[in-house]
Amino acid sequence: MGDYGRGASKSINAPNGPLSDYRLNSVCYATSAANGDTFGSDSHHVLNISGHPQGTYSYQIAFVPNTAKIGFREVSTSKIGDWHEFYTTKNTTKDSNGNLKGASLIVKLFTDKIELNEESEGVEMEYLGVGHYLIKGVVDLNADGVWGVNNGFVIPQDHNGKNVVLIDYDVKPDGDIELFIFHQQNADMPERFQNKRIKYFDEEGVPVYYENYEPCDVPESRWIDMRVEMPPNSLYNFKQAGAVRLVQEEAETQIEEQ
View 1 (cartoon, rainbow, N blue to C red):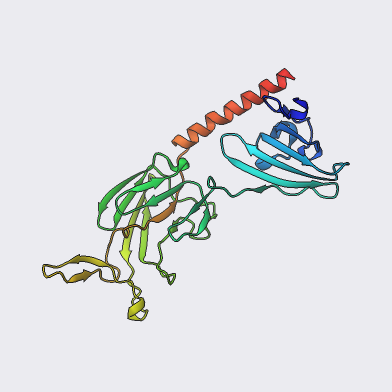
View 2 (spheres, rainbow, N blue to C red):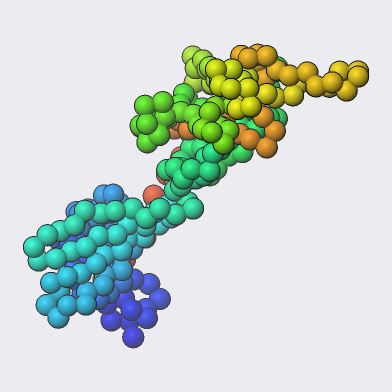
C-alpha cells in the first residue's frame, strides 16, 4: 500500500521534469516549478491513468487545491494533448434565461436584492429609486471577454427571445456601477406578442401598464446577471492569496520529507 501514492494518506510528489513524461498509474502532486506543463501553470494533485503496457496512451486528471478546478488531457507518444477544464456547478452558472455560461464574479440583481457567488462576496446594492440601482464594492465590469463583446450583462427575455427591459449604466470613478432599467414593450411586434407589464391597478381595478421605455424595477421572479471585476483586496482574493501560500508551504514540506 502506498506505492505511487495509491492507498497512502497523502500523495507523492511527481518526479522533476515534464509532468507529461510521468505515465505510471499513480496519484501524485505536481508543481509548476518542478514539472512545468501543469494544468493552468498551477500546482495540483494528479491522477495518472495509463492502460497501455508501454504507456503509449495515458490520461491525466488535475485537481487544483482551493479552487475546485479540474483539468483533463490525453498524453501519447505522438502528441501531448492540451489541458481542458471540466465544466461544473463551480465554474458555470445558469443566466436569467436558463442558458449555461462560464461563471465567476457574478452578481444577480433582483427587484429588491442581489445574490452573490463566492468570488463576488462583499458586493452591496443600493436602491436609488424606480429602475435605479447602485452596485457597490466593485471596480467596473469584467473585461476578459468570456461573455462576448458586451460581456457585463445578461438581460431577461420573453419566450420569443425579446428583452423585457432595457438597461443603461455608468461606471463611477471609484468603480461602482450605476444601473438604469427601462420597460421594453417591444411595440414593433404584433400586439399579442408585446410585453405589456402591469404597473398598478387604479381605483376601479383597471390595470395601468408601463409605458414603453418608462423606468421600472427588475421584473418579479426575474433577474439581471452582471459579471463584475473585484478589487485586489476583496474577500475572495484575500482568501485565495492565503490558500496559495498554504499550498506552496505544503509542497515545500513534502519535498523536504522525500
